[in-house]
Length: 176
Image (cartoon, rainbow, N blue to C red):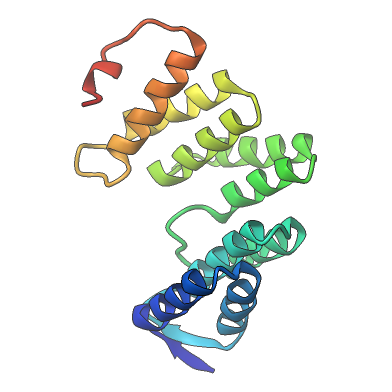
């Protein structure tokens, strides 16, 4: 078992960026998560990073496995790993399952701004602009100016509204 520091993860990420090898990084991150005992970063966060790298490597099935393990781990991941599961299910042409995951997240409530923003982006990417707008609006309304995601989600919401041909509203006016 090993202690995982933010610096250790940063070195792994830097090496992978230089090598442009997402699959190797995903495998290394997964190994780090399996060997995890403690650290500055949770095992769930490491598993989410590994999942994102598997997706970037074109291996969504492996990504799905990592996202699921992050959910099972239950640790803090910054974003609900189920948002990644939904996105990956869409990628795998399993849209009905993806929508079920999203509805479960909605029904449970207490969704972070980052999670709502991710779901909004996913829905837009797969053609559901109205659904994306609902999630982006929820994220904007539940976040404050001090939330690091606030401005990004305001911009996402504005972009969706423009794509839908909707007139500017009071929230759109906050985008600077």
